[in-house]
Image (cartoon, rainbow, N blue to C red; front, top):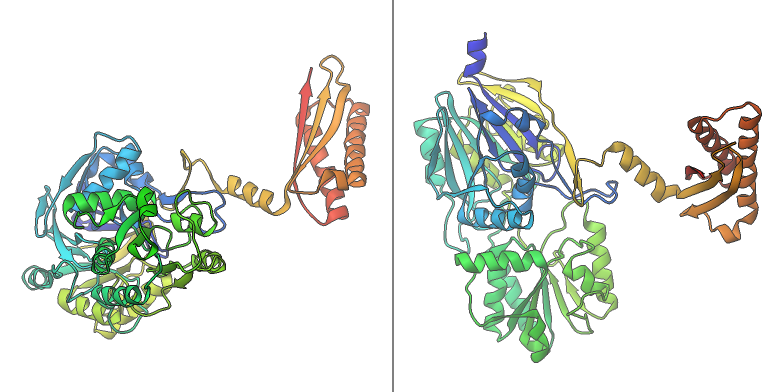
Length: 556
C-alpha cells in the first residue's frame, strides 16, 4: 500500500479556491514538492486593521526538505504577493519570467531579503527535477510574460493554466502557445488540468486588450482642454503602454502617481515593455504644462483608501489637486467587494467638478481572464482525463465544472476541492484523500499571524460599542483605595454629558470593593471579573450597549 501511495501525485491547493486571490498550489510526487504561485488577497471589511491576507504555509514549513522550488505563472499580487513571507521561512529557488522575477525582486528589496535564489525562465523551458520536469508555456493575460505550467511525471502531465485568456490580437504580438498545449495533450496526454475559473459564468469571449486603445483614443479626442487622469492596475503594463501611446498621439506628457505604479513602470521600462522616451515626465513638473498637455497615470482604480486617486479625491494628495473640468478615467473593473469604495471615490471626484468615466462605459477596460467560450477551447485543446477548476469563489468553480460536463467530461472525473484538500491522482484514478493545514494568515504591519480571531473579535467589539476603562490606585499595605475610581470612555459615551451614568459606574465599583473587603477577598483577578460582570449588566440596562470594560488596578 505504501508503495502505491508513493506513486500517486498529490495536488494540494493552499489558496485560491472558494475565494478571490492568495493563489498557491502544491504538487507533491514521491520525495519532491513544487509550489505554483504564492499570492495574497486584500482584507474584507470585517478584518479590521488587517493589511493583507496570505496562505497558511504550515504544510510547506513541515516539509521544507522536499521543496524544490516555487514556480510563478505571472506577476500579479494575487500570485506573487506572499513571496517575501514564504522566503522568510523557506530558502528555496524561485522560477518565473523576466518580468515576474523583477517584480518579485522589488518586493523582496522592500522586505530586505537579499539572498533569494531567483531564476528567469523562458517559454517552453523546462526545470528538470528527479521525479518531475516543470515546463513554462506562454499564455495571454493582462500582464506580459504570463505562463501556464505543465508538470511532467511518469504518471502523466499535471497542467495548470494560470490566469489566461485567448487574445488573437495581443498588444505585444505574442500569441498564446496553443500549439504546445495540443502537442503535450496528443503526445503525453494531460492527466489533470487545473483551470482558471474567474469568468466561468460569463458568456462569449473576453475582448482583446486592443479594444482599450480605441476607447482611450475616443476619450482623449473629446478632452480638448481638460487634464486627463487615468486610474488602472499598476501591473497592467499593456494598458500603461496604450495610455502612453495615445498621450503621445495627442501631444500630451505622462506623469505617474502612486508608489506601486512608479516601481512597476520602472521595471517595465528597464525590461523594454514600455518605451522609454521624453514623453514620461516627473510628477513634480506637471505645473510647467497646460492642462491639455498632461496625462496623469495613477493607482487607486479599486478605491483603496491610501491610494493616489483616493488621496486626490479627498484633497490629501501633495502634488495633484482635482479641479473642475478634469477628466478622470477609471480603467478597471471593481474586484468583488470593492464596489462601495470605488463608488465613494467617484462621488468625491464628481463633487470637485471632475468628469468621471468608469468601467460602465464601453471600451476602457477588458478582462484578462477567459470567458466561457475560451474555457471551452482550452478544455478541447488539453483533453484532460481529470479536471479541477481553480481560482475563484465556489459559484465560479461550480459553473466551470458544469461547463466541463457539457463538453463530455464525466462528472466523477471532475473535482471541486477546497483549500487544504489533498487530491491524489495517478494514470488510472483520482480521489480526494485527507487534508493538510490551510487557511488564512493575517498580516498587520510587521506582525504576521499574530492577529487571530480573538483580536479581531475585540477590534469588532471596540468598533461597535467602544471601551470604558476603570482606573484605581490601591495601598500596597492594606489594599485600601488611595485614588479613584476614575472612569475613561472611548467610543462609548461622552463623559461630560453622562455624569449620572458615570456616577453610577463609580458607585458600583466601590460597592464591589466593599463587598470583597467584607469577604476578605484580595485576588485581583476575582475583583476585576466581578467589576466587569456588575458593570456589564448595569451599562446594558442603562444604554442597551455592551462596551469593552477594562479595569486597571495599581498598587503603590
